[in-house]
Image (cartoon, rainbow, N blue to C red):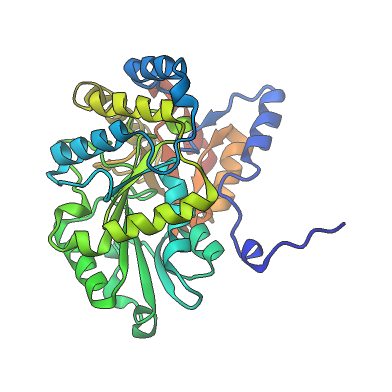
Length: 388
């Protein structure tokens, strides 16, 4: 039988890392030393107290029961306590917080709760593929806005055509941003919230990189701003901050009606995060003040080394204030996909072409700070040879 996918499935773009794994394995089998700067999956360990908490929880039979969407009340309470300490935001643990199987699934499921056919979601381009994928699979209409240097890599909402603004139901923002690594100023958040209030839209803020910030920069939560609780929901993750990418745990916080709608959708597609992982999430949040600064210092050191090495190799690299990424212009105007293919095939370096995250990313490539400093230096030198 020749399978025919749905129109929604066929309209999805290719996944950014499709085929990379197979090519890497082939090259390594041929003896090539591959340096992987592609996926944002650091080589670092989670906090030891998190591992201990999971080990202890796994031995308790009650932790093996269905979590459902309520989950572990202690995890909800730990989230609320952390949001209060970190951002000064007071949240109802049961009504304004929802545990997620990683923030990605919540981001992807949200449009199923809020979008009808013909309604628009404004999406950054380039951007995390869950934004576009969730909207397309829900039957909504994505409106992609290029993130360009002339707009400081912010979405210029005022430039969106009125015909699109009139149908807008969701606005996706992600600051500190993946892949451009920029943050958003306070006035931008205020303007975006005002836009959503006027249009009756929901502001969806992906805050996965809130804690990986350098040089004294402290990214703010959109929920800190006046009027945010009426129109905004924010997604957080333990993946990047605590090196827990495979654990799949995060949360949504904000407007109680949006939280309830997302929980209703999730009740039909999953039964919640393993309670043992939620117990480990409590341990992670409790370790935030003592453990996270040391982990962030590793990323800052890697940032400094990678920027210096890339500059020495001939690239125009800038040092971002946040995230685990560098967003680097491709020299000479070469298409980013071609440059990324040559980097892997000729020099064994995996980078992410800007265009792989959306047409708006053309002209750039992304470097993930996920390997030790000596490997970052070696990768930069090899990339310089690709250009030369």
